[in-house]
Image 1 (spheres, helix red, strand yellow):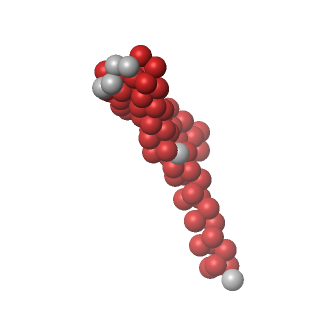
Image 2 (cartoon, rainbow, N blue to C red; image 1 turned 135 degrees about the vertical axis):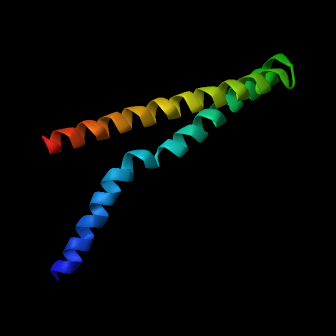
Length: 88
């Protein structure tokens, strides 16, 4: 029974470590999709077919990558701080 509980604790600890990273892919995709939809709406409104959707798609990709990098750096910094506290 204790082996089962130890395995469960390891699984839970693993999920706690990867949990903050699980939403990053969704966040990245949502940013790009939102920007594409804004570009599509602007193209429909002003009748400039590929202009705004292309511009906002590119902007969305850059914003998504920037946000992804910033989030990963913050999470890794936070994780490093937690490890330093545990070691001291």
